[in-house]
Image (cartoon, rainbow, N blue to C red; front, side, top):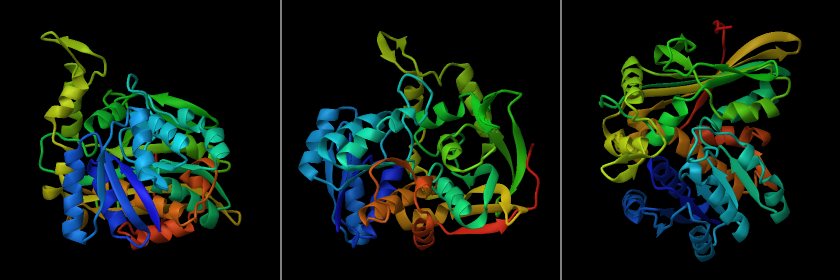
Length: 405
């Protein structure tokens, strides 16, 4: 039915390839490319051994448009699934435009030299993709991605108006390491150490980063996981949701962090290991956070001993038929079950599965638009159904608790 090219062979790429291979009736020709060909080959062998599906691999430097174009011309895919680094979003989008290929990613662009991310750079491609008759789907992981879909579904089916959204992301798992990140350490640390923002009454409000003593946090009682300290954090899906959820007055994002994680990260920040600028060391230029990345466990290696669950969802407050109500839409994912299915921990699983589903929506023509789109702009119903069918079941409950004002 379709030929796809997946760029990125890390933890999420591994999940995307295997979940696509489980739907070989839809994804009839699968290519996997990365800067490191051996990583692609490792995944290829696992897919063939576990699922009996043959995929093809290639080497590419996703920072170089010319290399990407050469690969796209060779493969001629219908769709590129970008699960490489966020720095590479624009080069991959440029290559897709030059070669007439549709595009999907899971995280928005950020410049390599600045710990700052926003959608403006990618939204600027709207007319370029529209003129080419191509579709670019942004942020189709879990958060962003499924959380956006939850909000879209709630807007369509559960509310007449939505006043506030609180996105709550809990990883109640234990990987057995003193300190590790669940996805690319460089991206993870850049994300959680920046100034926090949330949306209220038409403007962005700034609060201190999570490592500061006066950061905003509270204890939330998560389904299955129980009470966990949850910290206010800036996250990219808020930027698009404020544009596409009608009448929204407030949106916040909360993430759980254990005290050992925060202590390790604070020490690393204090000694300069989270810096993203170059420093000179023994006659060579190095970037401290990249050196740190080389020392930390590979997120893709964490799954084998990972126990516990992730709990991610949205609490929405609004009105239906004139009555005020609050709904909680969420998913619980088990690290051990994810590893059993695709040899991955749940954080990679919850990102990779929605990327596969989004790709399925596009190649089947369920989501067929011209231009650049965030997932909440598209009909959520079949996507929500496929979450149920592909390992990410969701629940909707009434929420009667209280959140911080």
